[in-house]
Length: 206
Ligand SMILES: NC(=O)c1ccc[n+]([C@@H]2O[C@H](COP(=O)([O-])OP(=O)(O)OC[C@H]3O[C@@H](n4cnc5c(N)ncnc54)[C@H](OP(=O)(O)O)[C@@H]3O)[C@@H](O)[C@H]2O)c1
Image 1 (tube, rainbow, N blue to C red):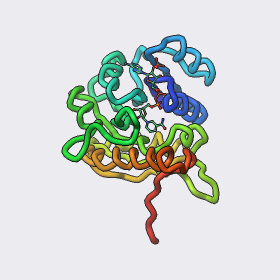
Image 2: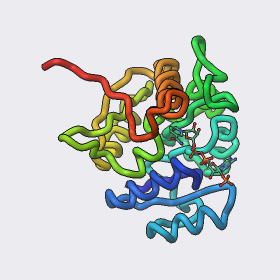
Image 3: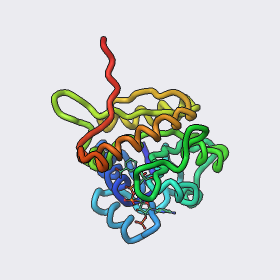
């Protein structure tokens, strides 16, 4: 697939690494052009917005910057956008949005026509960077929430291509549940001291 990654920080870098490793054609965009270009060069990706649009755009910026960043990305009608953000408070120990809404729903409302998918927000950048294999036959789970089933299929296929296990988390409204899971992950990793080599997982007895 052709994928645009917006952001060259912790998550953006890890996405570019894993997507290029999985054979995707990646375009890197960022606020800091030199940083984004260096990231693209490091992994053999392209720098800058693609001329013809891509199968999915991953927005890996702070939540507060996501809409502004996406507006620079030449989105086409029906564009699949993957929102990985967690709307964290400055101390990372709380959420600024929740219960009756979510970051994902707010971003979707600001960009009519975009097919927004919430995914990857429960995965630490360090885990993404290390890859989907969690050892002992286990794969990192990606929870995917979206209203558009075709867009959800695109993102699920993309996640599986990188080796992740996909958990269908229902409609976009369920980002209201996924974002608190992301926040709990941050608490456990940093607040409770478990470190960043952890990942949430839903088990099912078969
Ligand atoms: N880190 C994690 O473990 C983790 C896990 C799950 C979800 N998330 C979420 O993923 C998102 C990114 O996290 P991160 O840790 O990668 O943050 P980060 O390291 O601070 O990177 C954020 C990136 O966004 C870029 N950016 C900011 N505003 C922008 C704009 N208006 N247009 C284009 N690019 C812009 C920054 O540019 P500059 O390079 O110029 O600063 C930077 O490259 C956040 O929403 C976070 O909640 C993070």
